Structure formats: C-alpha cells, structure tokens
Image 1: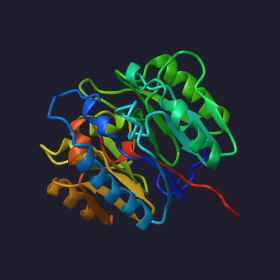
Image 2: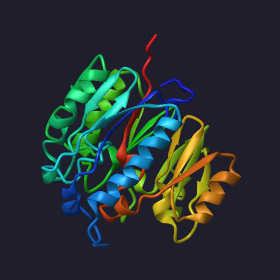
Image 3: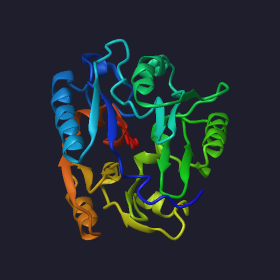
Image 4: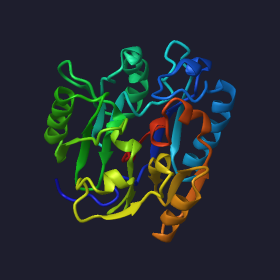
Length: 268
C-alpha cells in the first residue's frame, strides 16, 4: 500500500451514538461501578462538540436501550474513503449492533460490505496508519475474522498486518494510538512490541495506561481528562490537544476512539 499522508487522521465526517441508560449493564473487564446514562450523555455531548470544532460533520444516532454497549460505534464497523466494512464484534451481547448501524453507513458510503465467514473483529483492535492497517488479535478479535478482514482491505488496495496483541491488553487500541505524522502513542508493553517499526513513539507515562487511547482529528489530538504526564508528553511532541472527560466510558472499558467512526469523504 502506498503511503497516504493523513489517511489516519484527516477526516470530514463522524458517526456517533448517544449512550443509553442501559449502558449501566455494559461489558467490563473490571467492575469500577455502573456508569450513569445521564452523566455519560453529558460527556458524549462534549465529545461531539469537540469533533465538530475539529471540522467534522457529525451524525448523532439515537440511543439503543436494547444494546448497552452500542454507543461504542467503532466496534461494529470500519470506514475508509472507498466504503464501510461491517464487522462482527466478538461478544454475544453485541450481536445485532451491525444491523442497527447499517442505515447510517448506507447513507454516507457508496458501498457497505459485510465481514465474510463466521470470525469476529472488534474495531477497537484495528489501528489505521498512513501506510498500513494493523489488526490485533484479542479476546474479541480472532484469527479467522482478522484474516477475512485483511483480505477485504487488500482487495481495496490497503496493506494489512495481523498482530498478536500483548497479553493483558483488552483491545489493540487500548494500549496505543496514532498521533499522525509517523508518530505513535503507546504504553510500554506496546512500545516494546516491535509493531511500529522505525516510527517515533511517545510513551505513555507510568500509571497512566488508559491515556494511550487518544484520537488525532485533523489538527488536534483529543486526550482523556486526568492524565497530565501523558498530556504533557503529547504536547512536547508538537501536537495541539483538547482534553475531554471519559469517566463514564472508562467504567465499561470505553475510550475516546470507541465513541465514533471517523472517515473522509470526497464530496466534490
């Protein structure tokens, strides 16, 4: 795949979904208390505003009480300028989220294809860089799904690599993000993994691993609130930042990247 400058962070649009009250029943690896739907919606509103201020047109979908984790729209789909790929999240309770988001994808993309076979891929395990798309195997993404996904990407002209996510990391992007311009933000275990070749790595501060999940959106990096050392490291690397609260999302293993599908469309 040819290097495509800005592929990983130059966007025109996003799709999000309002958190439902049922998010209190969302999946989590560690019980840190139930998130409040009301507080989560307030935080989500700030998130949508930040995306809009970064230059995006944001489609805000209604809450789905039947699907507690459905505000994490990144997991059931993956978006590229050419079209969208419906994924198959690796948790039984999330089956059906793809059907619910399909109309929003059809409204924006000339083609929407479904992941073939019976394998599973969560979008949180997919890290798009400007010259390669990394797919991390995890408890939510299996090899069958990853290889089927990589095959579609190859047919669309993209290079994809399947990676063994380090033990103890929930999603590949739980522990790393692209800052764009050939710079990666990563926890120590991911920085030591060798996945990122000769790219510059900004290491997440000790004790601030949650802050590894950020998103570069055009000219700013959205960073979770409460991680001052990692925030300072990102700014020292030359990036402009916007800090956002993610306290409710964190209670159900969510982060900034999970809450939107971000993509570039040519509307000429």
